Image (cartoon, rainbow, N blue to C red; front, side):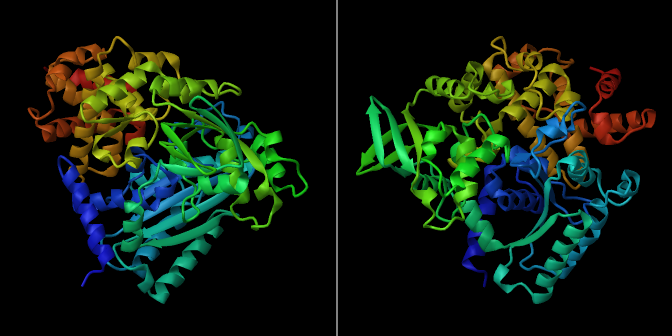
Length: 573
């Protein structure tokens, strides 16, 4: 008889399939789900999770691969890979993490699975192995994702990053019934990771039905309590002194895990052990130090409602919009200190601003993040056009994640959530016929003002944005549903080219301006009149013919504008 956890897990998986317009093959759905739950505490978006799924033929028993520098997910176009990037801008000892996932629907954990990962990683993590040799054994998708780690490791070697290689083995089994031989193999694999990458930490963890169900059913709370020592109130705004012990409790859940979701609206990510954070840490751990709030600007919280019971605030819709560096450093420095450490009795200054006005909230975010340089792209989410797009999506039952994972964390279906990066890629591919830029620069389309203004403009009707997002979701779901006929590399490299070609077929012409999509957007026309399988076959043939003319991998060619030009020399309308 299956355990209660397995029954509940299977119900969650079935509901996830029911939420999709077209259910995925069961193994594909489980891989996505397993990767999302294994990395749950790192708060990846649905698009980021999907981007790291590499399961399929020649996957080396690796179904997911993700690389993090500090707490930031690295992509192929991340700043660290720019030609003019200065490694000195990364602090010595910053964590570089490669996280691998294997997902099996079976109800047990086996030695064979670990042996396969051991064999593949012994080559994939060996910097002496050439790309040509690896391509004889493994799919492009696996190699491309692991290459992000390999390139980052080599580029940042001079900064001596704290390297970690982690492997999550995910099944529907019981972790309490794992065979001793399997446990032994896991410890051997950890040792192998450490020996392959000098000074690296290797970690293997098992995730079974109970762990999957617990992770998936965990709903982050945005209503929190904050106990204070002293406070002052003016209208709907408050200033309070909060002991570091109480603030640490506010930052963490019942298991001691940092509540990352309350930082959704902060424009910066955690910067690691940069000088200012080291100074914060030193002042925190100094037993003879002065009051912490004398030395620190404190934090700013925005919420929709507050009430006071005794000396405790009850805060609704909590977001820390300034003070992420301080908060993360407090968590990292104090989570393990002794309960009698004197620092826990010291205080941090907390500002609480109550508003339900999105524009007012965004002005607070901008104002409280102007003291030090912030990249322009980090503030895009506060632009008026972004708020208008979000409102239009909401009015039509869709959810535009101006701040990553806000809607997922309040229980909205991932199938109807679209983030800023995906929308930018969709408009670039379908509205400008530049899928090579969508593929080559997934995280950098927002950095340059000229690119940003072409994609997000008041001259583009709001229905066009929703239409483009829905059509890209339609294409992505179609590609996932045909995963036995398409490789992971094809799905990754050709998804935006297929969107462009499908739109061209739908309209009977190439699109050069998003405004050309207005008619189909206002009609709500989808791709149901197209034979998407025929469009995909056409695109794959164009690629095969182009590859005979141009040397290079599918990844390289998909990032080339020449391939797009070639497509339109072949297309007839």
